[in-house]
Image (cartoon, rainbow, N blue to C red):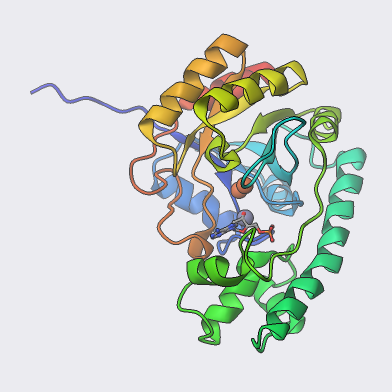
Length: 291
Ligand code: AMP
Ligand code: ZN
Ligand code: FE
Ligand code: FE
């Protein structure tokens, strides 16, 4: 019987302990190896510390890595994102001063946002302090998943998911807006740092396929370089639709799991919920476009 050999895949969307993942950058590299991947990208929120950590020691010879970042942004008019509108930056220079300054601004915005979320939780009767959350985050960029983890530990909720649904998610009572960079500025910033901007997890933008196609066309005309078609929670139909959109608009296709370790239960490096496979070409085409 003929045996179909699936070439090694890649995972271009991974969070580490530098932001709100629960595995360190080196643990993530190890997990990527164990999953048989050929390449990975660390794409933490608002920091390149995880990327730096791997680069400072050297990427293992059996693995390829592309530097990444994930920036919270806003859909340009007239589109309104119903959920997260995030821009990934690939191939950025982690030492870029202009990028470093912008990321520092986003981290400072978190420092004014985080106490507001904690105050809302306290107002709702939950005993939780910023110190507890910062201790869980361990010096990393503090995000809502760290707050959810404290709430789980203190048995205020049964799971991270429950903490988001009841309190922390956009639209829930303890949600506070975060620092964002508008789309045009996110594109300029990523390109100024030598990288390529890619729309992350289009499913979370929450538009109909028709509107999503219109949005992608507008974003492409404003400097977007690619779209994350392969994603843990994308249906096969959505992935195929996004690949067709990318082909017609001249956009690159990328993909990744959005692994966060214990903060996103059921999502694994390389395979997402079990059925994700991001072709090596996604990595190869991205790196070729950066040359
Ligand atoms: P923050 O950077 O503090 O706004 O937190 C953003 C992170 O929270 C995302 O990257 C996800 O890891 C997580 N997140 C956002 N919404 C949800 C949700 N509804 N359920 C579980 N995790 C979520
Ligand atoms: Zn996250
Ligand atoms: Fe995201
Ligand atoms: Fe992410």
